Image (cartoon, rainbow, N blue to C red; front, side, top):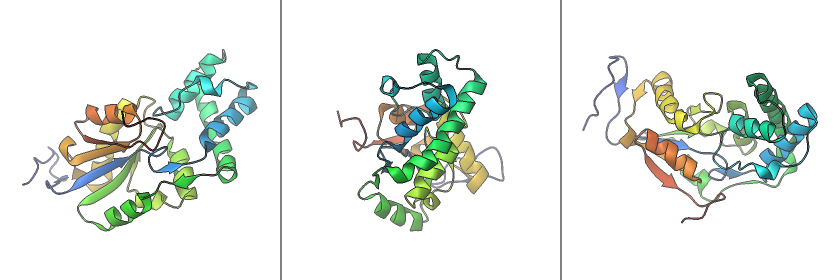
Amino acid sequence: MTIRPSDDPTIKPTTATKKLLLWDIDGTLVHTGKAGEFAIGVALKRKFGKTGAIDQVDFRGRTDRRICHQLLEFHGVEPTQEAVEEMVQAYLDALKEELPNRQGLVFPGILEILEVSHERDDLVNALLTGNAKRGAELKLSYYHIWNYFEFGAFADDSSDRNELGPVALERAKDTLNLSFEGKDVLVIGDTPHDIACGNVIGAQTVAVATGGYSYE
């Protein structure tokens, strides 16, 4: 059955058998040994001279920009757009340093799933993540799986994770010249935030308990 095409005649409709898989990163694809948390602590000290209280902010399922905004606010630094951007860039610089220092891993089964889905014509792998694009590339390149993903929606696109689903669908049009409807999209993640952002676009959602949340 052919899905209703976009109003743009140059955009090819998908078929009911073609699926878009939108993957979260941390806690879903990989565990970086908390390299991100260490890096953000380093960035906070380097850029703003603040230490401690990293555990006062819940990192799970939130965007890099939202985390930086919350940390600055907690430490009494006005979270202006400029300050948040400086903090994000300092974090990304520190992340590159921290990744080799931490004991991380690609979760069991992930590489096999990516290999199989990458070879199949009816599946498209992409990212829907709270990471900034550079952070996503640093993490996934370090674990040798960055090249499995066609495109992504990132914290650079919005600090609100619920706005990233529509961005991913637009990027599918721009990158692949394909228009996906929600029912042919699977959002895969380890936090309630992943499920919520999938619901925004009417996607099917797959919750995994490899991160900080239980099945319940």
